[in-house]
Amino acid sequence: MNPKPGGRGSLLAVFLTVFIDLLGFGIVIPLLPIYTKAYQASELSVGLLMASFSAMQFLFAPFWGRLSDRVGRRPVLIGGLVGTSASYLVFAFADSLGLLFASRIAAGFFGANVATAQAYIADVTEVQDRAKGMGLVGAAFGLGFTVGPLVGGELTRFSPAAPGLAAAALSLAAATFGFFRLPEPARHSAMRHFDASHLRRALADGRMGVLLLLNFLALFAFSQFEAMFTLFGLAKFPEVFGVPRALETATMEQVLAAAPITGRYLAAIGVVSALIQGGLIRRLVPRFGEVRLIVAGPAFLALSLALVGLAPLLALGEDAGWALVLLGCAFLPVGIGLNNPSLAGLTSRAAPAAEQGSFLGLSQSAASLARVTGPPVGGAMFYALGPSAPFLASAGVLVLAAFLAAAYRRRYADTF
Image 1: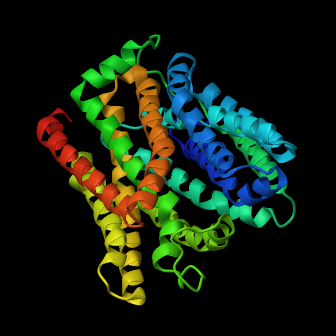
Image 2 (image 1 turned 180 degrees about the horizontal axis):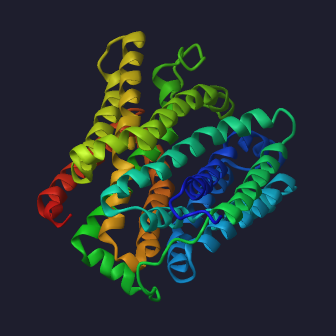
């Protein structure tokens, strides 16, 4: 019996695709000190190695999305997993910095198919259930990013090649599962070729332009939190991060020693966010609607980052200040869990049925651009204005996003 689009097997295949894509993003993080020592890589080279993955997703998410509009979701999702598996084999056996760059570029290229997974969800869900389905993609996204660094760190105990081999095996297993369990969803209408007019129409459409901007602003702010949290902790809460005194300028070794502490907090944030996106969002969307949740999401995120940034400035003492940081961290997954699937659902609903992959690809490009630009902007503010600056500035960005979302709700709520 052939599996039905939207059945458990097909949705599991979509979940695995996104999970493995983000697993690949995070699995390299614990290996950075090995690369630095083995190839005498500069900090700039290591930063570029990290950015290359997101940069390729920024460039090619629209390509995969529009290709899936033309040839179907199934071949793009399965083919992307096969290509991802090959990229991890190169990663595992790379013996030079050039091959490492090649492997990460290939992984970003083949892994830029999150939009295709979202388009698949859009194809097999009713309009009113769109955000609920997108929550499944969001849950896979959060868990993949959370598990990646943990898997990479544990497997390096056996061999530097072990994380890459494990990721290659998982990708190939997911491709095999998808081959047998992922049917092609029914097409809603005849497909059209994608060209530059898509971008012009997206930006000319008030709904789509605002949604793309909101997606960029949320990820731009959150990526600064991810990038600066360890340095922030070393500078303002040294005892929590395992050093005897505050370090305004930490060495690479000190950052790496403190990284596992950051990893635990990010893992907790990722798990809670995944639970919200995979479960609670199903109850919240029918009650409040996506247009309200895209206002609440950035508002919660703004509050969380403001609390983190203000904690060392309020002269509360290290214990009380760190408690305020933890309170801020507790709001983060709530904001992410409300914002991401609701934005994806609204983007899908605003896009023409025949061009779901194309427009969702634009949304993923906006998110990837935010991940590329957010960390260096946060780093520049950290060193120029102080450790709290990236968090307070990001909170301001998210307040702007909340106001934009509120304006969107007032203007376009009656169109849904």
